[in-house]
Length: 350
Image (cartoon, rainbow, N blue to C red; front, side):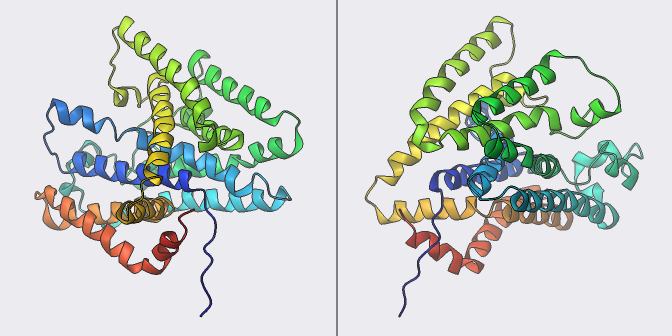
């Protein structure tokens, strides 16, 4: 019998993506089930919020890992263009379908729209409301469409990483220090209810691309040396100016404090997973394989878990805590259905 030779993957980006999808699902379970969390629980919950940053930054990292060393530029550019529009189409398809079939009285969050007559397809298309809070797909889709610019710089320009670093600096200056107004700025800065404005959340996307091109986990010492001081400085800036030191309070709109804390957490996760890989335990290897498997299935799990949440809320409202049963069951069933693929991860331990 011929042995299976699994495809080589970057384990660490899969770990980070796995942490991201698990964290985001837990945030949604907590928020949508209206569970009361005590002070300790709120601080533990803050460990989940970097997962949103990872969602965006690893999308940029994947662009480089998948295509940064491709022989041509045009073929990857076309694939990225199509992929980006698929994500945008998925965002609008989900929102429009849910608009016409869903009973929004079963999800109190949307009463802010329905009670004021704002929940209609025109407002969904113009990004003033949403029927499903999956705006991160829209932003990632737009950034993936633009990402061939980064690939072009990588392939065609000398000192490409320096050039991309300057672009990142320019985005930061434009986003935080140059006042803008008008239709275009309303879109890129999302002067509405959409939570992931293109201009601000392009920062983690480009940072993720740059980290991957410079060296992912193999440069973990660099990243810790860079991000730790930045996080400390931003912490003292927050306290000096009487601003919140809770990272999630700096997410909407996106602020430097959340960015630096999330980047530091990225570096720490590199070390954590590096140590966990060294543990000679079969159970640990299976757990790590599972995290990688879920991480590489991020998009499917993300969309499906929202469908599960919506259906359970619709069918059993006000028993919202049932989503804590339904979503884990979904994740288990997804893993069982994809067990042949999961076995590849078990075999690919190096």
